[in-house]
Image (cartoon, rainbow, N blue to C red; front, top):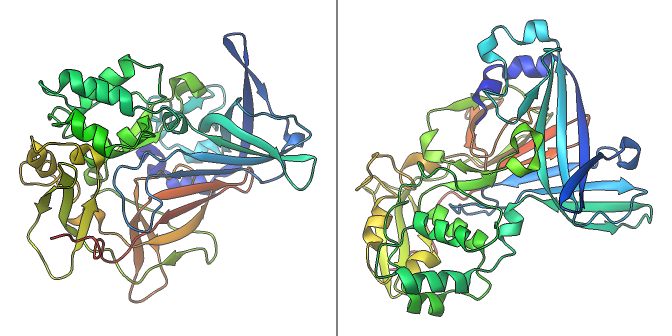
Length: 423
């Protein structure tokens, strides 16, 4: 969450002079990456689109780890596949009315992805995407190529690690092998997968023995199990998500994953006072609170449940997490209990309870590019029965370079898991 930008949200929009998007292409020269600005005359107007999501399925899936994607149409260029691409946004404002105090100014110390222009208070630079070009194919118009790029989460999905984890498990299963220690062993034995966790504070099960069995691992896990699969399922067992964060100081090398912790920002709701025309769509229902969660272990031959007091109408979260399915029964109860309030040291529900009560919706908001996945938002509605839509941003899509709009969305069903409740 970029709380400082939300604090001056209306002023940022009302006093905007212009957005200028700059796209850099980085090519490898020897061992050095060389940057060049993509000329505006080579870009098909308003074709830029950036998608980021922590959950894009109809039924909620905790864990996320979904690569962000950029698409862009370019003209009169060669094949740019394999090159890096960075999208930078320069915003200019009427500064004398925009920043009433220094503490509200979105400087580098408050928002690490910003580069402030000290000689001109009204100008700021931000990185909104950094990644590698996956393809750059010609379209029906032979002069136009469509760039498709992904952030470094995608690289983590191209590196298989079943055998690597199996080797570690066979060596360490006689001692505690936690998510944190397993991650460190994986990173130490392989060139960078593109994901490095620098802080474990929000991983409630970071030090709990996963109880992995090398026999079960070989039996359960597909040979194409990747680093991204590992992080997705590990994040689910901690009730968090990971997204690729934008690089500090606008350099690609400093990009790191950002941990999204929905249960910690339940009481922080950001008002978005306006949206584009009739773009707001929403459901009549609010998703039911999760009161039961079920995880299989011992290759599905055992099931452990996380329960909360039942009320009339509730959701059921069912998981086929392979990390618990490869658990032989050791500590699995403690791992699952930590996701609720039963034995949690901070007494905050990670999955159950009201954490995921929200109204499914979709809306386009003009120029509010700082809205982030994981944020809780409130949008006004001209409806006597529903005065405002309150929800969680599970996906967002930035469109355009000059008339920039941001589409925010949360898919969902009223009652989860009705078909998965295994007795």
